[in-house]
Image (cartoon, rainbow, N blue to C red; front, side, top):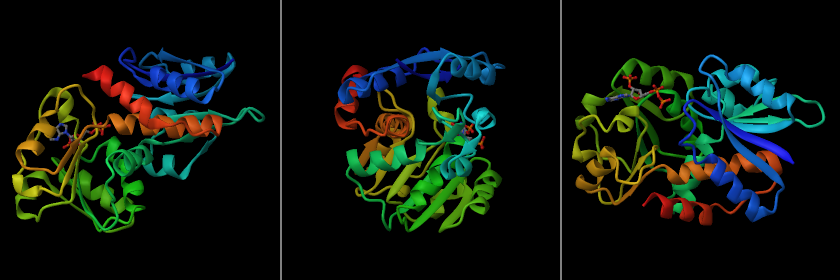
Length: 273
Ligand code: ATR
């Protein structure tokens, strides 16, 4: 049977095996998907062992997304722009390894499909300028956003991203956001949520028409989501839909079959609550 896996450290919490098994069942694709805990210094070796044993492809998660670039023979434009790989595909004829990044398209599909929100001509604010942000900038720009402002605790990192991409981009520190007009979409991509924190933000960033989106998912509202609710955002979402959509795109890359994401997202949501 065709073998797939997700590599990470830690990995026990990963929902990817469950998501891909549901996709496989739904599409009647004959495959196995496992979670592999790679040693912190041993991602490449762990991946090569998996391929030698017949592995056809994998997902890559924290902290190996950058390191995964080095095991690829070719990279998609998306992976090059993100400078990170979350999906590895082994060409069954040549054995060549293609690296891709489906995180950004996952975010865009979740916003458009599950949240029913069009990004065209919208003013978008991203909070944070780390690895996760690099992967979502180009897919957001491709939706024809009006402006994409990146605000980060360390403003130089936000500025560096503005220089690296082409489009209606701007950058600032977090503490000058009170001087800006409200945004249609505010995306939290700081890792502060993971430790139950969030930067101090002015409520004036949001209106009743705004979408506030946290890239992380959680059973309870994250500190960012709580802030957005209090600040009066029209729609508040976590990143569970992005997780399912990035997986759906990876599944498509491996199997050339597009699974239905909605029932899988509903099943995961029911488990979380
Ligand atoms: P990821 O891969 O999740 O993007 P990362 O590359 O470590 O992780 O980036 C973390 C981001 O969260 C950075 O933008 C970081 O800001 P700095 O560049 O100033 O370090 C931001 N971040 C982390 N903790 C934060 C906090 N308590 N308040 C504000 N921003 C924070």
